[in-house]
Amino acid sequence: MRDALGALESVLVLGGGSDLAVATVRELAKERTRTVILAGRDTAKLEPVADELRSAGVTTVELVAFDASKPETHQAVIDSVWADHPDLDLVLLAFGVLGDQDAFDQDPAAAAEAAIVNYAGAVSSGLAVAQHLKAQGHGTLAIFTSVAGERPRAENFVYGSTKAGLDAFTQGLADRLHGTGANVMAIRPGFVRTTMTEGMPDGPMATTAEAVARDVVTGLRRGAHTVWSPAKLQYVFAVLKVLPRPVWRKIAAQR
Image (cartoon, rainbow, N blue to C red; front, side):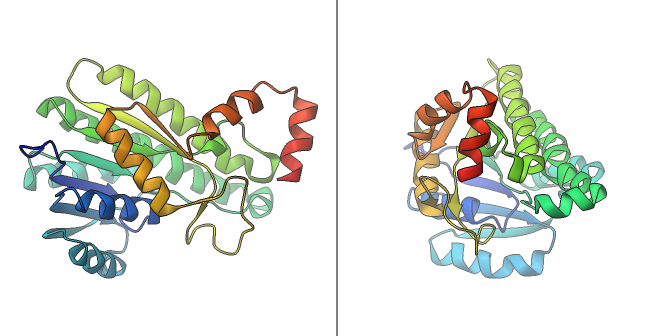
């Protein structure tokens, strides 16, 4: 439950090692968020993240085993978290894999595995979270999608297609929960300098995890349904989405 001043007290992070999610929690810790549950496949690797958040002011950090690639396990994991924490303010759904399109071209099974993580895993865990938010009558599920889903490029179209599906799922779930007291927010970052993109050249309007986190927290305060980061990408993609395909191909190939 939010505290008397409206601050979010508790957060569940699905994809507890995500740079974007961790930066968001650090930003929230400045506003009195004190209980954080980090859910990830390897809880041992989350220990340094937990220490970092404690140093940032979070008083209670718990680690939970969660495998995004196994949707059949998600309901039980989410139910267990809510049994221990019956009133959660925010869930950050932040897991995903980028992959390599050249490798996917040669290994369709690997591409399908990435799609399971990025889309199917998000659907199963997102719906499980939605059940609990609806039942408690408040709270927000914030899902990190990507501008890559706005118009997928040939260079990473498998990843882009999963993000396009995830964004559509997020919007539909938000409409489904409208009027229940529960909220769903789509977060559409552009190119972010993180461990996932390490070694890659910066994309246009490249940003940082910290900047995205500030935009997310601002969106949460406003009760926004969509957060673009940086915000001007909204207007850029309003144009890019309607370009004739031959023009789009030329522009996308230059990025």
